[in-house]
Amino acid sequence: MYRDLGYYWLHLAIYITLCLCVGTIFHDIGFTFGSIQARGSRLMFVAAFLTFMAIGGFPSFVEDMKVFGRERLNGHYGVGPFVVGNTISSIPYLFMISLIPRAIAYYLVGLQKSLGHFAYFVILLFTTMILVESLMMTVASIVPDFLMGIITGAGIQGVIMLNGGFFRLPNDLPKPF
Image (cartoon, rainbow, N blue to C red):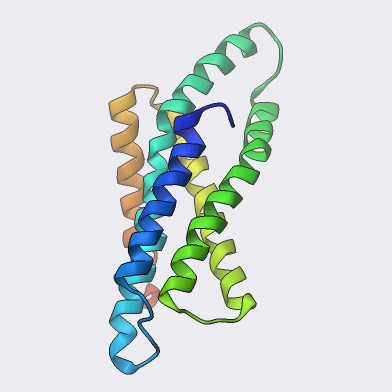
């Protein structure tokens, strides 16, 4: 995966650039009553948009699925080892993508200075990135067409964001959701 420039390295460069922009736009917003909306907007952007960009990894997943299909037919390994291996091999990169750009945005904005708050923020985004990567891998295995896969993955992520508590509090959502 480290050899695929478009998969993780381009994502890292784009995330760093976007987080520098977010950190600059929301620089030192403070903790006053008037800054509540700015902090909420900033957190929504980082949590939703930057994880939504993970659909950019869909083409790599489609290529991985093609290779996996051939190797599975040849009897090299099955679905379980492929999923576990892909997940374990992506963890360092996803953690790096969760840590470096988010540290830039977190401290430029001037959110809580304690290490515990920052660690919670990074771990939350890391688990969200793993969720989205897993979602896109699942979509790639079901919908191997590039355009339909991007549309399907984006639609599912949109539903997740709508029901995630950013736009409506979880208690205010209709009961089926």
